[in-house]
Length: 276
Length: 334
Image 1 (cartoon, rainbow over the protein chains, first blue to last red):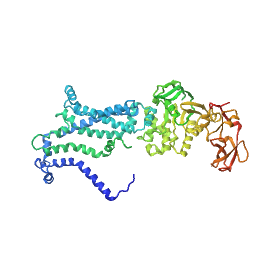
Image 2: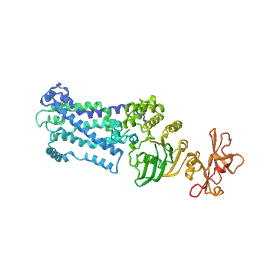
Image 3: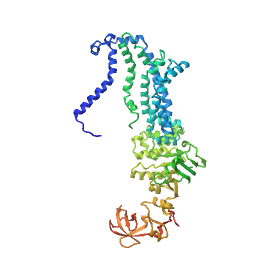
Image 4: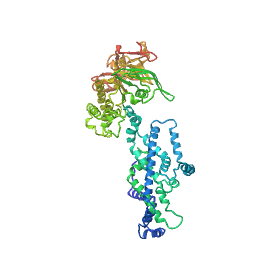
């Protein structure tokens, strides 16, 4: 759509866009600033926070008190593990729904999505008890499975929308060329869906990385990911802003860097295949 | 070998009956064209033979064995799709080699066959490109290459030329015909273009609403169309059809005479009319002639030198031996 836009109007729009962007980013920026202050300075007025001296004291304390790399390792294991496991289950499922839909395929998709509308706390007690009885509490495998199940509807939905964009004739051509179902999925569908699978993978790693409810409920020490690591610095008394901010910064840094480098895939993932 | 027999094959999608019981025999080495207006079920019929759709009832026999329940991968048929359906993530070489890779042929044999196909189809310079970097005609050749390397029992073509421009289409038509005479493999070709059907086929199958209207060689269909539908569909420009008093003179409900079987004259003839549109093609001239008592204008082919224009009086004389007579049910009369 062509429209005449005056330079003033364009500058105003640009300024407004930057302002909104800054507002969204501000809490993260503030956390990073606080993490480089002493506990005393961190609770001061915003002006005081900005003008006081800078220090890495909080990081040193956090690192000496808890094992960042254990939690980091757990976070990587759980987020990557649950996503990869989810993809292994979701690729064939989405294939079936996109290319050989049945009468109830739409209903199944809606039902899967509807599970995301249920508050997680609603199933906390049964899942907790199942975990307890199965001896899965505070285990990385248990947590990986739960997060996989929780993100599965999103993974299936995303893959389904990508697969729908792949022309069915290409898959039919592979069948005519002698490909078995396995060959068809492995050599034709998956390579063609790589961009979609990549954005699904990235988005779900981020979702699983940030997942706090289940990780906090089902882990204590051994399997605790970075969410638990952050939470351990929030205490009912004493000064903890700087340490909490330092822990948060350390926890979000890896995912922020990952997100930065994969922006293109992520934007495509978030628009959910709405544009071809 | 590629002898295909359809025995009382039907296909319904839900309540909609696309193919009523249909019998057809395709002999080994034949070039068979399914032709008909869009929605006549010709593509569905091809997909049933390919195994991409399951028949609702009936039997499909390929080379003497019942293939009705055999999956497409095992029918030893190769298909060329309208959209080419190339694998966009693979090079031309890998596209052509894909069926061989699926058949687990050794690498040396795969290379030999790919090189051979590329040579035949003039693709040797493009083997390392991706389909996205090729023109429409080149893509079509890759699709054909992918079909020929595996030496199938029969080739299936689903409107393969409809995405190409007119000039390219004529060229590819010749290439496919040449390919058929060289390979002598059964080919089944679906098109809505009766010119493609006439020029390429050994045997034409004219379909309407899933029914076979007539099966025969191009000239059989041209000379003795079994009914009005075939008469109107085969031949370009279309056959002129007259009913009423003119037809009654010949003891028929409808008479048909092709534009090329009418002599036009400015001074004398059987029928009198006025020239509507005159299309001068150089080699030929087509006159659209308005006649009294006829709603549809008559089309007449005359030589390139005939000099008559819009509004001129024109006399038409049909060649009696090329007149087609049809009864009230639209069927040909002896």
